[in-house]
Length: 256
DNA sequence: TGGGTGACGACGC
DNA sequence: AGCGTCGCCACCC
Image 1 (cartoon, chains in turn cyan, red, brown):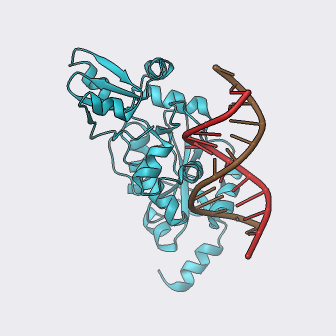
Image 2 (cartoon, chains in turn green, cyan, yellow; image 1 turned 90 degrees about the vertical axis):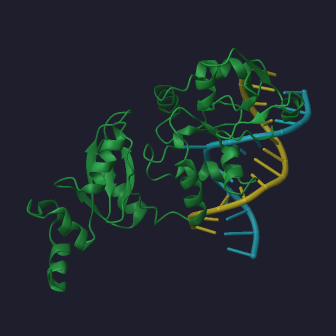
Image 3 (cartoon, helix red, strand yellow; image 1 turned 90 degrees about the horizontal axis):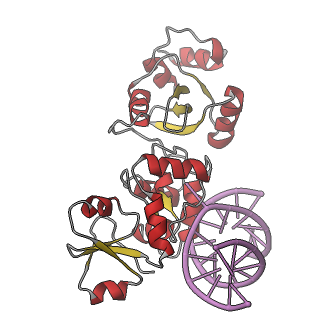
């Protein structure tokens, strides 16, 4: 494709581009495109650029989405004609597949990227506190800033920011609403009712008889509860130490 | 430059 | 138990 061709395409009426334009052509002219994918919370728009998925939003009015996209990223986005490898991966992941999806975080600040990369490591069936995430990225006093960064997550669901909750195990905010966040966590196997009972009794950690203690929202605790005789709650780290318990290497419990 | 904002958290009633 | 206050930090004017 020549340089002048590229400009011709850019200047074309984007909505009427020929279906013959392949994903390869879109990649060459650097045009972002979007498609609709089913997800656990209903249909979402998935928008992507050459490097990866740039945005996930609840599906609704196309004009509103396109305007939001340009406002947020300073680039236009047009309906995709067909899936390519990036959107196909996103589609699979949004339906529960264990797939690696390339993500385009170029418009996020370095701090936001650190937060999002850490959130991406939290596995299904788990949740971690905002404060925990702040500690993990080496900014232990930036809890509030972590919440702000997650609130600007351009790719919710793909980067599972819904798995970051408050230290008291209440779910906290979410771009699609706290109720959706709660439903997502439950659908992933986290028993928030059980967690609430533990917290209501004044416990911040849970120990199993095999010698480890966890955050109440650790996914591994539920697994271990099936194979060890019982569990008991703890109020402080000192209490855990007094019992000779080791911190779970998965959830890495933090001080109250 | 500096003041305002916010998906937080600890404390005090 | 729930609310106001304040400290914290990154980000935006």
